[in-house]
Image (tube, rainbow, N blue to C red; front, side, top):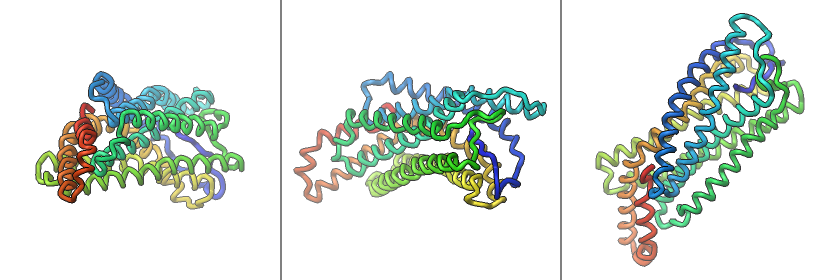
Length: 348
């Protein structure tokens, strides 16, 4: 369920019918549940059953699939909630099923674990590829132990953020509404703004890092002597898809969430914008949720091809380094470099 805020001045009269969201959520979450369970389950099973190919990228991919599964397993609860809400809306019966506060906290926590766990681990994969291609000598940063520590730290951060946000936004579950927040309360307004800042920061900073990492990778790949190969062009296309899908899934949600929150708090008194953000919110939330189905497709099932092309690009950079007089440095780190390129995206 999403955070519902009671509209008040100056947007108290900006009401709009959004009952369509009950059907939309039921349909979209049912599709996401089936696809997400299948794709992430298969990817996680394959990754965990291939210990011989365990590397830094694999560690991040396992964590990514696990984070997505947290959200997938919570979807039946959400589907049931919106089914009850749709039934109450159709019958006009105000005495319907009302969720408990624990239910709200559970669904919110699982939602944020998936949403921001996915974002953080997608960034980890991007940075890992950045070091593998742009700085192939920095093998220390791609060691298995380092990846495990980074992954553990991110899990702690994501769990802390995911648990604290529902507690920060704590209110009793209002009848027929899940975790309703009262923006007319000054304390609630402050907590809502703090939560908004955390959410936007948890998206904006990782997004900048992800875009920078892939832009640098793309720059190196375009300069590779293998750039005319068909597989090379296919890999460039995959990276474009990675960037495009990431922005398509997450950017509309966070932009709309910003406008949705500010208009409901009265900090952005624009009736048209208030109506638009309320109507669009279910669509962009469903779009962001659908990302958990796409991650295994673009990161796991396409990784073998990416591995081969990036290995060629890496070798080209090292050959170029030799021509610039870096022979001693290359010889010193050659075994580490070859180990990096051979396991990059292998089996993942």
